[in-house]
Length: 115
Length: 113
Image (cartoon, rainbow over all chains, first blue to last red; front, side, top):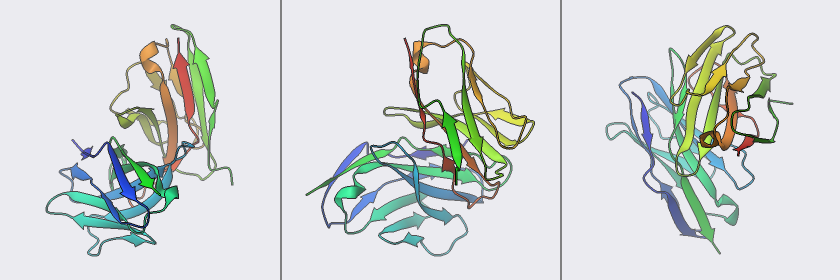
């Protein structure tokens, strides 16, 4: 069965510093997708970044990058130059890329950016 | 662009009552799903559908029913509400292509008293 593990319930980071949010996953599939979503206090789910299991390069989207280590089954999110608006809950998710295409999510990490 | 629309946004139920959470999407997505979000437990998959007439159970299906008669709509039914079903519910949709993100509704905050 597929599983996503986020071991950091909460984290603090100083404004303008970089922060890494950890995500490990477990799957027997060879083809899958990994996603990160942000949930601010307003509650909506915002897509941040995607990494395919066959992508050779780590994904980047602006200040977000995904540190993908396939052999270790980890997909950590790196936020560079943190801003106060980055304070939110962050979820790692995995999706099957065939069959049911269902998404499963981790338990989330609450990030607080300090001024 | 409506995207994914959930109704209602807030609901209070008494134990034993039934109700339906509505979810509609206008993006012609084949994949739709329902999640519940509880503190410390992330988003847990309740039910999902890969197309009209096809549904399947997720991690926590007990106490919930779904049906998918059209591509656009995917309602979630609580058969007999229990306090343990107090949660925030999210509906999501996506094309059946692995690299596509899920598009989420705004959520329904349900309280069962």
